[in-house]
Image (tube, rainbow, N blue to C red):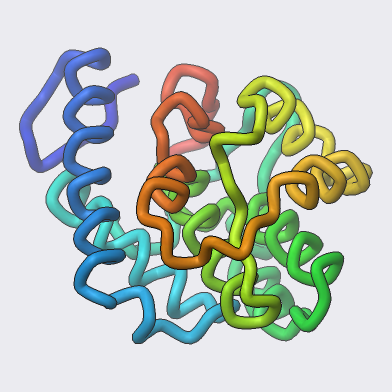
Length: 201
Protein backbone atom coordinates (compact mmCIF):
# COMPACT_ATOMS: atom_id res chain seq x y z
CA UNK A 1 0.00 0.00 0.00
CA UNK A 2 1.40 3.37 -1.05
CA UNK A 3 0.56 6.24 1.27
CA UNK A 4 -1.45 9.07 -0.25
CA UNK A 5 0.94 11.95 -0.69
CA UNK A 6 1.07 15.56 -1.87
CA UNK A 7 3.68 14.67 -4.46
CA UNK A 8 1.20 12.44 -6.31
CA UNK A 9 3.76 9.65 -6.43
CA UNK A 10 2.33 6.17 -6.94
CA UNK A 11 5.59 4.21 -6.98
CA UNK A 12 6.79 2.95 -3.60
CA UNK A 13 10.53 3.19 -4.24
CA UNK A 14 10.21 6.69 -5.72
CA UNK A 15 8.12 7.87 -2.76
CA UNK A 16 10.67 6.50 -0.30
CA UNK A 17 13.51 8.31 -2.11
CA UNK A 18 11.65 11.62 -2.25
CA UNK A 19 10.50 11.34 1.34
CA UNK A 20 14.07 10.81 2.49
CA UNK A 21 15.41 13.65 0.36
CA UNK A 22 12.79 16.20 1.43
CA UNK A 23 12.72 15.26 5.10
CA UNK A 24 16.52 15.57 5.28
CA UNK A 25 16.36 19.05 3.77
CA UNK A 26 13.83 20.09 6.40
CA UNK A 27 15.74 18.38 9.22
CA UNK A 28 18.85 20.33 8.26
CA UNK A 29 16.79 23.53 8.16
CA UNK A 30 15.40 22.88 11.65
CA UNK A 31 18.94 22.54 12.96
CA UNK A 32 20.56 25.44 11.13
CA UNK A 33 17.83 28.02 11.77
CA UNK A 34 17.68 27.26 15.49
CA UNK A 35 14.04 26.14 15.22
CA UNK A 36 14.74 23.12 17.41
CA UNK A 37 15.84 25.43 20.22
CA UNK A 38 12.36 26.97 20.32
CA UNK A 39 10.72 23.65 21.24
CA UNK A 40 10.08 22.39 24.76
CA UNK A 41 11.96 19.08 25.07
CA UNK A 42 9.89 16.09 26.19
CA UNK A 43 6.51 17.55 25.27
CA UNK A 44 4.20 16.04 22.69
CA UNK A 45 3.80 19.50 21.20
CA UNK A 46 7.52 19.46 20.37
CA UNK A 47 7.17 16.08 18.67
CA UNK A 48 4.16 17.30 16.67
CA UNK A 49 6.11 20.33 15.45
CA UNK A 50 9.12 18.21 14.50
CA UNK A 51 6.95 15.78 12.54
CA UNK A 52 5.08 18.58 10.80
CA UNK A 53 8.31 20.36 9.84
CA UNK A 54 9.80 17.18 8.40
CA UNK A 55 6.82 15.90 6.44
CA UNK A 56 4.41 18.77 5.72
CA UNK A 57 5.58 19.01 2.12
CA UNK A 58 4.85 15.31 1.60
CA UNK A 59 1.81 14.27 3.65
CA UNK A 60 -1.48 15.86 4.69
CA UNK A 61 -1.22 14.03 8.02
CA UNK A 62 2.06 15.71 9.00
CA UNK A 63 1.86 16.68 12.67
CA UNK A 64 -1.48 14.91 13.13
CA UNK A 65 -2.33 11.85 15.20
CA UNK A 66 -2.80 8.73 13.14
CA UNK A 67 -6.34 7.56 12.40
CA UNK A 68 -5.49 3.92 11.89
CA UNK A 69 -4.28 1.11 14.14
CA UNK A 70 -0.82 -0.03 13.11
CA UNK A 71 1.28 -3.11 13.75
CA UNK A 72 4.76 -4.33 12.90
CA UNK A 73 5.05 -8.09 12.61
CA UNK A 74 3.05 -9.48 15.51
CA UNK A 75 3.40 -6.34 17.61
CA UNK A 76 0.55 -3.84 17.68
CA UNK A 77 1.35 -0.27 18.65
CA UNK A 78 -0.98 1.57 21.03
CA UNK A 79 -4.58 1.19 19.78
CA UNK A 80 -6.39 4.37 18.77
CA UNK A 81 -8.79 3.96 21.69
CA UNK A 82 -5.94 4.53 24.17
CA UNK A 83 -3.64 6.76 22.13
CA UNK A 84 -4.64 10.13 23.60
CA UNK A 85 -4.37 8.86 27.15
CA UNK A 86 -1.06 7.14 26.45
CA UNK A 87 0.45 10.37 25.11
CA UNK A 88 -0.74 12.35 28.14
CA UNK A 89 0.89 9.78 30.43
CA UNK A 90 4.13 9.87 28.44
CA UNK A 91 4.31 13.65 28.74
CA UNK A 92 4.09 13.31 32.53
CA UNK A 93 6.99 10.87 32.69
CA UNK A 94 10.15 12.23 34.38
CA UNK A 95 13.21 12.98 32.24
CA UNK A 96 15.94 14.05 34.62
CA UNK A 97 18.21 10.99 34.26
CA UNK A 98 19.47 9.00 31.28
CA UNK A 99 17.36 5.99 32.28
CA UNK A 100 14.20 8.09 32.59
CA UNK A 101 14.79 9.72 29.21
CA UNK A 102 15.20 6.41 27.40
CA UNK A 103 12.14 4.98 29.14
CA UNK A 104 10.16 7.98 27.89
CA UNK A 105 11.56 7.46 24.38
CA UNK A 106 10.58 3.78 24.43
CA UNK A 107 7.04 4.63 25.53
CA UNK A 108 6.65 7.18 22.73
CA UNK A 109 7.81 4.55 20.27
CA UNK A 110 5.18 2.16 21.60
CA UNK A 111 2.56 4.88 21.13
CA UNK A 112 3.73 5.49 17.53
CA UNK A 113 1.47 8.54 17.26
CA UNK A 114 1.85 9.24 13.55
CA UNK A 115 0.88 7.31 10.44
CA UNK A 116 4.45 7.42 9.14
CA UNK A 117 7.74 9.05 10.14
CA UNK A 118 7.70 8.12 13.84
CA UNK A 119 11.28 6.88 13.98
CA UNK A 120 12.92 9.95 12.52
CA UNK A 121 10.77 12.38 14.49
CA UNK A 122 11.25 10.65 17.84
CA UNK A 123 15.03 10.35 17.40
CA UNK A 124 15.23 14.13 17.00
CA UNK A 125 12.85 14.47 19.98
CA UNK A 126 15.09 12.16 22.03
CA UNK A 127 18.22 14.16 21.26
CA UNK A 128 16.43 17.36 22.29
CA UNK A 129 15.65 15.89 25.71
CA UNK A 130 19.17 14.55 26.20
CA UNK A 131 20.62 17.91 25.19
CA UNK A 132 18.46 19.85 27.63
CA UNK A 133 18.73 17.53 30.61
CA UNK A 134 22.24 16.07 30.30
CA UNK A 135 24.02 18.28 27.76
CA UNK A 136 24.57 15.17 25.67
CA UNK A 137 23.25 13.73 22.39
CA UNK A 138 23.62 10.40 20.63
CA UNK A 139 26.30 9.80 18.02
CA UNK A 140 24.11 7.73 15.70
CA UNK A 141 27.10 6.84 13.53
CA UNK A 142 28.37 4.63 16.37
CA UNK A 143 25.19 2.55 16.51
CA UNK A 144 24.83 -0.56 14.40
CA UNK A 145 21.53 -0.23 12.56
CA UNK A 146 20.55 -3.88 12.92
CA UNK A 147 21.32 -3.85 16.65
CA UNK A 148 19.26 -0.69 17.04
CA UNK A 149 16.22 -2.08 15.21
CA UNK A 150 16.30 -5.32 17.17
CA UNK A 151 16.70 -3.49 20.48
CA UNK A 152 13.78 -1.20 19.64
CA UNK A 153 11.61 -4.16 18.70
CA UNK A 154 12.36 -5.79 22.05
CA UNK A 155 12.15 -2.59 24.11
CA UNK A 156 8.38 -2.81 24.90
CA UNK A 157 9.15 -6.00 26.85
CA UNK A 158 12.60 -5.13 28.16
CA UNK A 159 14.38 -1.81 27.61
CA UNK A 160 17.79 -2.78 29.03
CA UNK A 161 19.24 -3.53 25.60
CA UNK A 162 18.33 -0.18 24.03
CA UNK A 163 19.55 1.66 27.14
CA UNK A 164 22.97 0.01 26.93
CA UNK A 165 23.21 0.47 23.16
CA UNK A 166 22.41 4.17 23.19
CA UNK A 167 24.48 4.92 26.30
CA UNK A 168 27.61 3.68 24.56
CA UNK A 169 27.04 6.29 21.84
CA UNK A 170 26.48 9.35 24.04
CA UNK A 171 28.59 12.37 23.19
CA UNK A 172 28.91 15.98 24.32
CA UNK A 173 29.11 17.18 20.68
CA UNK A 174 25.64 18.70 21.00
CA UNK A 175 26.11 21.20 18.17
CA UNK A 176 27.51 18.78 15.59
CA UNK A 177 25.16 18.83 12.60
CA UNK A 178 26.56 15.67 11.05
CA UNK A 179 25.82 13.63 14.18
CA UNK A 180 22.31 15.07 14.29
CA UNK A 181 21.67 14.20 10.64
CA UNK A 182 22.74 10.59 11.18
CA UNK A 183 19.67 10.13 13.38
CA UNK A 184 17.34 10.63 10.45
CA UNK A 185 19.26 8.50 8.01
CA UNK A 186 16.66 6.52 6.07
CA UNK A 187 18.58 3.29 6.66
CA UNK A 188 17.51 3.52 10.31
CA UNK A 189 13.87 3.33 9.31
CA UNK A 190 11.82 1.58 11.93
CA UNK A 191 8.61 2.78 10.34
CA UNK A 192 9.14 1.17 6.91
CA UNK A 193 6.06 1.16 4.69
CA UNK A 194 6.07 -2.45 3.67
CA UNK A 195 6.49 -3.87 7.15
CA UNK A 196 3.42 -2.14 8.56
CA UNK A 197 -0.08 -3.51 8.80
CA UNK A 198 -2.93 -1.07 9.29
CA UNK A 199 -6.60 -1.22 10.13
CA UNK A 200 -8.25 1.60 8.25
CA UNK A 201 -11.17 3.29 10.00
